[in-house]
Length: 94
Image (cartoon, rainbow, N blue to C red; front, side, top):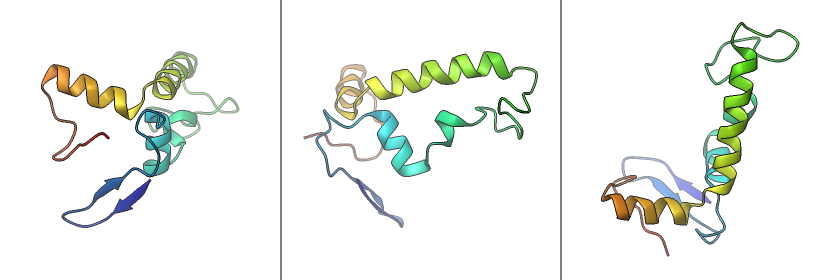
């Protein structure tokens, strides 16, 4: 994946959209914190210093990570076409 900054910036896929997961895309653009850190952004959300909702959020985070690994950009493009919605100003698959 290659990204371009600026007012006309965007992302160009290097790999096939059918093989590119949502998790891989999020990780490449924003890092892996979404899949490893507190989803609420609270400090000390790890096992060593859990916050009150820690156990519930771990389960939600894991389910989200599992879905994000299964969902490909190709599938997101197909679903957006079926629902007649746009994921971005320009989104082309293939």
